[in-house]
Image 1: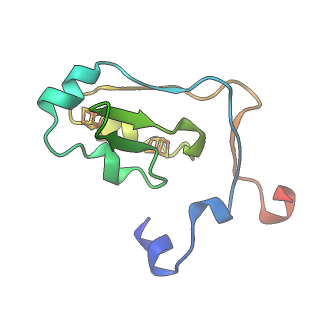
Image 2: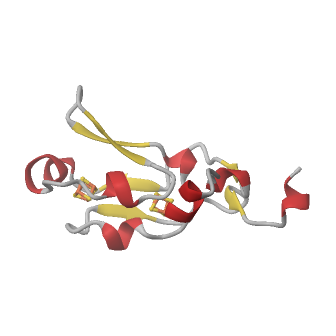
Length: 102
Ligand code: SF4
Ligand code: SF4
């Protein structure tokens, strides 16, 4: 992400996402986020900011339609609290060449 930020670019400039109607990302236990995860690293290591802490509901909000399938989150969560699988066939991110994205 840092290279994208330095160049003032966005990963979304290079991909196309066809979002599934169901989330392919789930939080296994929301109490763990609230009670045991002090720094909530998912809210800053995800390159497209899929995870955000919602102050009103006191839980992680998951904007799964922003996921670029980098696969960092299942490994980056210190509590193994993120369930992740690929979106259903035909949905999700397309990393084709730029010309194919128009
Ligand atoms: S890193 Fe894991 S445990 Fe911490 S807030 Fe995110 S999902 Fe919850
Ligand atoms: S797979 Fe990557 S882009 Fe998708 S939610 Fe996880 S960290 Fe974010």
